[in-house]
Length: 581
Image (cartoon, rainbow, N blue to C red; front, side):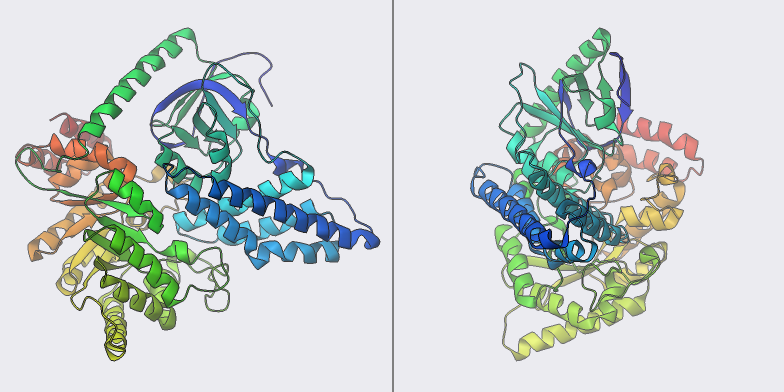
């Protein structure tokens, strides 16, 4: 319920793009909540299906137009995201199944489409991987766009000219919507739903617009035209701020903008600590088009190329050729800089391909990542051959996810060797000495890190999963998500143990989870001996700033004190002390 009078209040969500924006709220309509069911007579069923087909055509035309008119100077993600939405529209489960529902239930097109969307979303909810799970929002965004057409809403919401900047307040916001709003004074956006890895969040970061998601009921509580402050760094929204708060945030905004200008100046600086130690700062990517952002951030390589994007939202698995083209593009675009490609990290889920991927009751602990690949060797073989072929065009490395035993590693290496043999037989060129690494993301792997390091060329610590599995916390469960703690003593010990094992054997170790991009933890990881970080491109400059200000001899002893402290409450003060050194 909306407040009856102007009152200041604060909301907390997940900040997905840093920065501070101050402006007037503009509420974006949510067509999904307006859908009602009504009966369609038998003699009008055919017309209802035609109405649905026409709506699909209109939206398809709109999206294609948006894609064609994208400015060449715009973020590379825009075109990819719009293409993804077009691909979702073409999927049989969304394009055809609602027609069957209309016939079977004699219902209206909006209702049938919404029913099918909920069925698809339920399948996505079973996926353990956070990034893939967030893809359900793309389906919802596509469906909402079609429903808006069915309901007669304009595809592009107009915004009245206003003197101040506009802050979009939406239940959710599709990349296509964001593109259309961009022509206005679009300073920030906040949404009720979404996560840090949603396409909308990725887009916000690429556009460098302060954004907050998962605010639950922002659209219900905020009124159109209301003055609001968005602090994307803290995930805080302040509605109708007092004059004192407004002045304070104006000052913070100026300071933030000044800091951003300073950060840009260090883009070309090498990441070297004050004592002369070189640090590798790599980027994580999802699609080949992300390379543009990687270069813009000054990253010296790609530490994690997630390949799941190629496999999602489709019924058929991508063949070797399609994968090869995608991997080759990244290798070529990086012009000799390292590109670490993670092999398929799907969870058990029917949506990806019900013919080959079986369901399980607990995907987080079930048939996922390397376990799935070993159980479906034809899928694994096709991907390995594609990666190997692409290695001829650049500096590619292979990263195997979710290893928990040496037996899994050895089986993986055997299949890799068979892939190499098949390419040799076909006289197809590839890098014979391609490096192979393993992800350390379950406690068993961290405890056996030295054994893994002996048989691999490098290790990469996936902190998101390592924390989840070590602390037995389902990150998607709101009731326990507050227990998710990167600096829990057990987590720090597992990370330090893995780094130490790699350093002992001269095998590079990187961190590629969220911890790598958190500048508050940069010195801690440096103190543990970490020399390679891989993160979202938007975090690279802030982490580089920390690297440039760090003197390893000074921070190592404090990092050790933190590592040896078993009291969670005492860790935060020590961490603050470390970052002030």
